[in-house]
Amino acid sequence: MAIFNKILRSFALAREKYYLLHVKFIIISNNCWGYEIYKILGREYNTPFVGLYVYPDDYIRFLENFHKIIKLPLIFSSESKYIDAQQISYPIGLLAEDIEIHFLHYATEDEALVKWQRRVSRMQRDIEDGVAIYLKICDRDGLKDAHIERFMSLPFDNKISIGINKKPYKNHLVAENLRDMTGNFVVNGMDLFKKRYRYMDFPLWLKNGHIQKSVFSKILSKVLF
Image 1 (tube, helix red, strand yellow):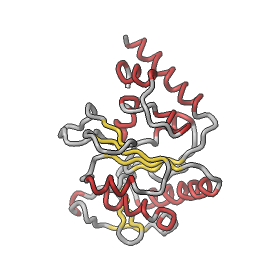
Image 2: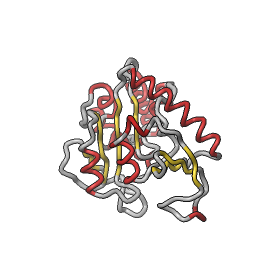
Image 3: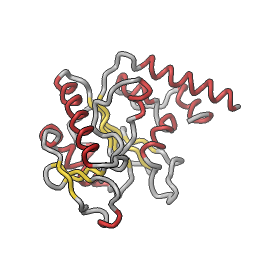
């Protein structure tokens, strides 16, 4: 079984490379979800949303004014409106004075700033070239129904929300069996991406905007991801 899974995993990754070989995209997520596809395809990050997370209020406000806020300078703060100062062990960036970017997987402010600026520059270049933006949000960090409603109203063609409960939106995906240890919301962004075939055929979404499970993804969800 281990050998079979290894072969199937290799085939799945090869399929993603084949499907997405000539497909350009920009992934924006509220946490680490999605960044590994860039590594799978061997591409530079054209998104700054790598190794970080954003709380729902700030994430939605950012997206509602995306094209303006993404051009603003990133500054840093030693405080947060969401967590106590004693718990802060990573850089916290600010956009538009109070939209917090939690650079969870960065050691220093300098590292966070350099990578943010470089990736924002790539993203803005690709946006000008007409590259499609793909948005994702999930039910972690205090997400409420009002957040989802605002998210679904955003003027972007490609967006999905993921959670453990059903919602009245066709592009909301239920991942009931991907709960974190509390059981109240989905697993962290990295694990949620690794198990992407549990709730949709991921390359089909990036290739043509289709949000669906395929026969292939259903097989993978049972024996691998």
